[in-house]
Image (cartoon, rainbow, N blue to C red):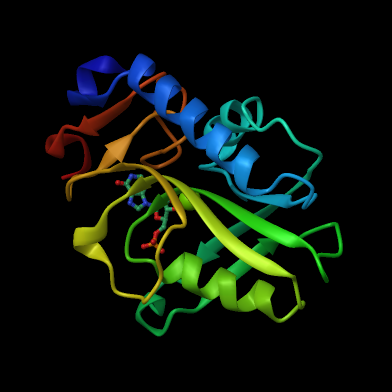
Length: 177
Ligand code: IMP
Ligand code: MG
């Protein structure tokens, strides 16, 4: 698996330090607000598991699974494969995403959840790739800004592989070309 990685962008230690810092910031910002963390599957699963262990407040968690409609991504159409199981009306929602790339997914998701009248919606993302932004969406909490390269590991995949790498690496272009 590691032979497919061109270089390590973020080490396990760098990720751990930053994720705990962001968890402490969220702890301070949402004290007494009983927020609901909404993880966007599958990419969020390792990040969210680590982040939540640094969030020291009363809160709940739920998950959604989404995918882009193939061929229509430019319209911003996103398919909901799994919806929330809890009511978010009046709740402080914190969306947990692996990477904010074009922003199409998150801007759709934010609008979709806004329709359910939450008290607020914040976005926390592990990675932010601002060079590729198409939609007008930003992260309230971002752990790392990354260059315009395809990255895998720590939950992020290429064709469902590499999610289990304990670091974030740049995939060798020959793997996907
Ligand atoms: P967006 O809608 O373009 O912002 O894309 C969001 C989704 O695309 C992310 O949740 C990822 O699943 C996927 N994605 C975008 N860039 C990368 C990458 O560099 N590596 C792995 N997945 C990516
Ligand atoms: Mg994703």
